[in-house]
Amino acid sequence: MKIKTIISAFSFIICFTGCSDRFLSAQDNPVNTSQISLADTKKAFSELPFKTGINDFKLNAPNNKTWEFRVIVPEIMENEMVPLFVNLHWSASAKDPNIHKLTDCYIEPALENTNAYILSPNSQGLLWYNPANETQVVNLVNFALENLNIEPEKVVILGYSDGGNGSWFFSETHPELFSASIPMASAYSPTYNSNGEIQKIDMPLYVIHGENDELFPLINTKVLVEQSINAGNQIEFVIAPGLSHFVACDYLPYLQDAVEWVKTSVW
Image (cartoon, rainbow, N blue to C red):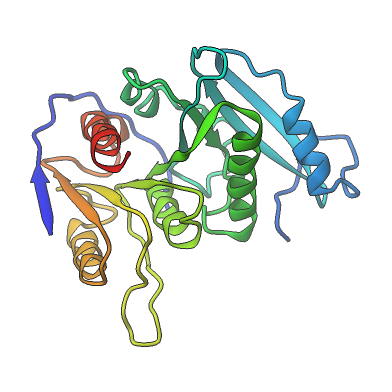
């Protein structure tokens, strides 16, 4: 197991609360969307007015549900294909309509020197491995691949806390969509096969965890990583000295290193 210890040069702190049918209810949408199909949602995505910079959207989805998400579009040349980074936010069960918009905490600055799209969906108050969010994330990624200038072999899933657990989950369940995964401050319960072994994940992971994480203890993630490596998984494990759980923005330098790892070791 490769463990790298890096001393953070950042000291600012962010605190947030909580960490923890196929779609989510639309609480404030007067339109009756019970008859909307996935094809309708796909068409609506294709008609969104994407512009360079931040784009915040809300789409009607089947079963009278909605998807809310942010897409940050880079400056690109005509026909230029660039990567996509899918950001899963923390506090997935908080039902915060704006939590997916906190992209300036770490994902935007981490990609400052990388020309790439960012897709940041809202969990709608459900954990990321809930079937509703699995449906939302998988389809939004596919819609983005079909409509934006994204290189299909360069799609990364990442997240913090609950979002880190979601990163593990999508690595296990949808390796065909992603080229790498970056779980941060996570505490995932993996899938085991009939022999009691952790399921092999068909993509590389860069796992980052704070040394003093009081919510998701480091030892648990170390054991998970060790078992995963023994199962044949390719994992880089980075321990962030002194970091506790509720300091998401302090993970920035570690995420920057992870992005460089993706660019130099995966792509």
